[in-house]
Image (cartoon, rainbow, N blue to C red):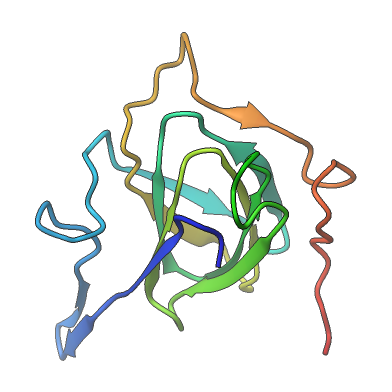
Length: 151
């Protein structure tokens, strides 16, 4: 596992009314600080990648559908430099993945319908000085192939 990445298995409570899953609390061991909460979506087969943040930690939960979340550690001096992690998260695997700053990440929709991701980053987005640094999803310096892997 890439150094600094944390995984939290979410407890889902179900009854005849529906489901409830707590994602993050201020007394959670993964809680760092609150920046904002936002929703993003990805359509089936679409890849949204690559980017990293210099300040911000992200905490992703996929609440509808399934995504393949991929992380790449390019940090100089990191004991896991060059490592890639894949996580399949969503309706069938309710997890929160916390991504440390300076770790590239991206995701691909792997459901037959639009997937919905909730992110609780540690920083508030500043459109005048975005803490976001990007590479192309395909053909960049990151050694990862987003195509489906039939094993």
